[in-house]
Amino acid sequence: MRELSLHLIDIIQNSVVAGATLIEIELDANTIENYLKITIKDNGCGMDEETLKKVKDPFVTSRKTRKVGLGLSLFEAACQRCDGYLEISSEKGNGTTVTAFMKFNHIDRSPVGNIVDTIVSSLLNENTDIVYRHIFNGESFEFDSREIKKIVGDDLSDPEILCWTKEYIAENIENIDGGAIK
Ligand SMILES: Nc1ncnc2c1ncn2[C@@H]1O[C@H](COP(=O)(O)OP(=O)(O)O)[C@@H](O)[C@H]1O
Ligand SMILES: [Mg+2]
Image (cartoon, rainbow, N blue to C red; front, side, top):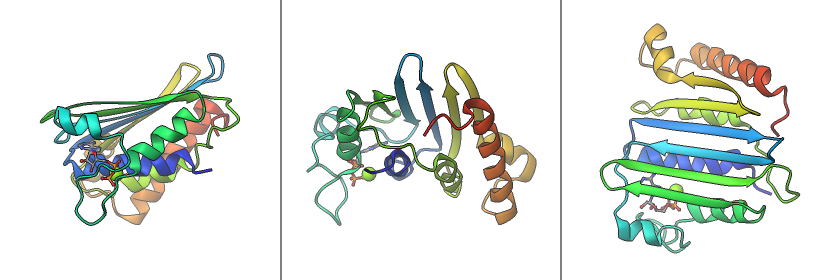
């Protein structure tokens, strides 16, 4: 079973390639209503209607080095396996939103995996800011790379800063869900 954080890395990479300067990622888990929802919203180049229609087909990709694009279709399969769905909305010139929805306690649901490392590694994309919102049963924590940059400057790739950021995000996630989101 592929971890959901690995799907997330794929989707974030799509946004970076699309030239997004801001990616907003939300992981919303609810054990009472039994759902897990992951949303990735970017302000990149977006897709025209024709591309959007075809995009969930595993044989569609705009890249030239490989014929099949798998990121979105693999993520969709992971959602559908556990009574969920993947929704993509996009507007040429305005950005793209990918929403993944699944049953939280479904036996086939992939584990979330290492969400902290996923977020921290996404900070290495110099021209892209990251907002990460972590919600558990309605309680939330939000991280915004622009806030960190106000304090330490635009370059977050310094190992000490990355280390500090990693601990900061990990601690706050732990405070929100106590390790319940797996
Ligand atoms: N966030 C996005 N913004 C603009 N276009 C996107 C975005 N995500 C996906 N696409 C388009 O959909 C195609 C398929 O994406 P994906 O399934 O991840 O495969 P791949 O990245 O290997 O091409 C991409 O090649 C791109 O044209
Ligand atoms: Mg991709």
